[in-house]
Image 1: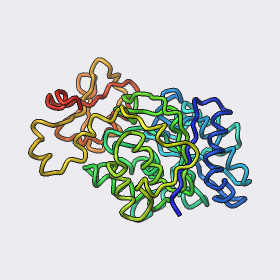
Image 2: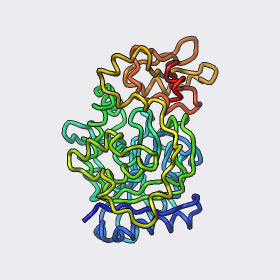
Image 3: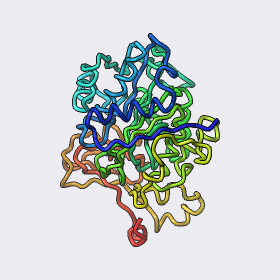
Length: 371
């Protein structure tokens, strides 16, 4: 039997449209009752990168989350919602994220409980939130976005947010290249194995996502599957790249954690071809991310990327300093400054900057090539 991925066109975030699409994709997979036993404990895991508004398209839209909560309520389960945003401060900082992203309002309306990932449980040496043990099921609700390091952030990568905040920095620091980081992401995904993934791709981010430097684009889609790897494979196709160009997808397939071959994926609902973009903007760093190391070493003087701060846009909020796993950012003359010798191009600084003050610069050759 083929892996199944269900698609439903959703033109905007009108509550009735989102409800209809979420219900449709899950019904096509057999219904929520076939996946979750009655009277269970269910954790909903959205993508809450930072404290941005729903219309900024950086976090999972609360309308999608609210529709998922309503769906799970059919099982008479206790429903919890949580994430580990890129704000490693006090509880009030997390409260701000839940408030600004619209999650607090959505949970209050539907009777779900917001939880905080503040107690660790070690899984294969990785400090994960203990809520993965306190709940019977995890429903993964990512946002479809590009990512400067991994090309795509969606189903598999969203489970990274189940690692406690400060330890996410350490994992970045321990994995200094995209291959190692991708393997680490799959390690985490393998520990979690969500029962269901529902993707918010109504409005997505292309270009230099996943933060404020990305560009919003209307992809008008809700996707669902019990195979998160297959979902990422479908999203890669929508982006116009091969599924295994996304290294987390390739690694997960090699471990037998999901399907990446489109011939072995049964697409239900809409026709995939109607959503494939010929001009989907990829991250500018993606040109070299899969280049063989020997060739990259030869070309590194002509082909390079580096993160830099646009000084006139920097407000010295220090978020980039707090999150940088390589300790490559410091304040100089009241503005952030990135040390290119320490920078590992993880894009964390760009992700969390609320002022679009961090950009990816590239060499003259790449500019001439138009990539």
